[in-house]
Every structure is written in structure tokens, then in C-alpha cells.
Image (cartoon, rainbow, N blue to C red; front, top):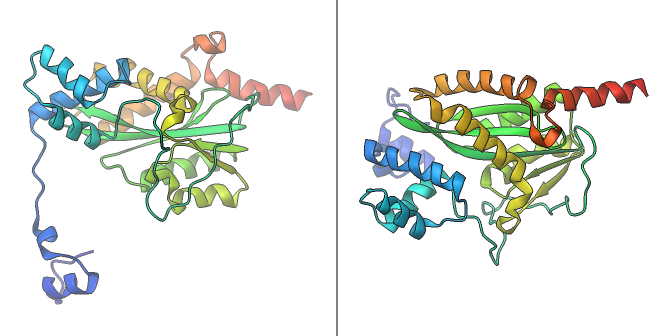
Length: 275
């Protein structure tokens, strides 16, 4: 927004945009290599034990020889966008001003492709930093319909993934997500509502509803991300493009009687048209 080469002074531009100049000149400190290693290990432990909060996570890390306190672990977990999974008294709190939608999957039997899609965000460690991944998943077939990688937890790359899935595969009956600010943003929900999709949102107490997406994250990380030290977001994006192609077309799934997501997704449509 600020044009440093404009004839309008920086002071005046800040006044017009109602920005504080101190925030403009502030340069955030880079994350240290030690913290990057800690974040990688926290991510691994969170996949193995998603019920661990910052206090117990810090205890495990100290047993492994890391000199770290609970507060620092909590800060890193917030930066990564992860938290302990357990039943809470309140549901997820969306961004102030964002509309929240009711949960629609109670008692619903998923029997066909494009009946229910789901999405979420996850943290991806790299050799010298980290990134975030979002994906759109068809719950019947487990097919990854689209994905995007970003270096920030913004709404834009989530909207891009959604737009691609809608363009390539039509629209689902129900779209389910958590109440994260990226998914309650009007920019994200409007394309769904325009196509008549019923938007469903679960809260923190309904973590199990996103279990299929969580299983996808586990597969992605243990079968690709943790095996390579990707240097850049571009490298991660290319690698995941190959991985999701393998995941959809070649990787047999035990829960699908060792069929692939593409077989489940496209064969159903073929049988439906034949009938």
C-alpha cells in the first residue's frame, strides 16, 4: 500500500491510510534455526499426540534435551496454528464480524462423491523456514480436489484452492470446515453460497469431524515433507503436486478396500451414468 517512491511523503501516506509509522518501519526478527528445529519437532509430536498442550509438550521436549519453557512452546504452537485437541466448553471463535454457520453433518451418511467436501490448514516445516498448506478433500472418495501452499495463514490462498476445486469438479452439497478466520471470511463463503452449497462449520469440541483431513496431513508429512529438506515454497509446491497426483491415482487406501481416491471418485460417476 505504501509507495516509497511516490511524491507523496511517507508521513502523509500513513495519515491517509490511518497507519502507524512505527509499524511501517518495523522489521520482524527472523526465526532462529533453533526455533525452526523446535517447530519441526513440535509438529511431529502434535501428529503423534494431538492432545498435548504447551505444558506437556515442553516437558517432552526437555526430556529430549531441548532447553525450552512452556511459554515459548505455546508461542511457537500459536505461530504454527496448532493447539491441543480436547473437548472445550466453547466452540471455535471466528473472526469478529464473520458469520458462523451451523454444523450440518450430524447423522449424515456420506454415500457419493461431491456430497461433502472438507478443508483445513496445516503447518509445513522446511529447511530454512516454514509454510502453510490448505487442501479441499472429497470425503466420500478421499480425493484431494485442489491444494495451495503459502508462507502466511491468509485467506487468499484458501480462496484460490476453493475456486479451482469448484471450477474442475462442480459444487458439493455440503462444504464443511472449522471456524478459522480464513474459512469464515466472506471471500471464502460467498463462492459456495452463490452455487447453492450448504456451508457447515464445526467447533473446537468437534475435532473428530475433520479426522479425514487430519489423516491426509499425516500422510503428506510422513510420506513426503519429513523425508526432504525443501528450501523454498516453490519446491514444496512442486513436490506436493507430484505427491497428490500419486495420492489420488496410485496410493491404495486401506479404508477404501485398497482402492485409490480416483477409482472411488470417477467409478461412482461412471456407474451412475450407466444406470
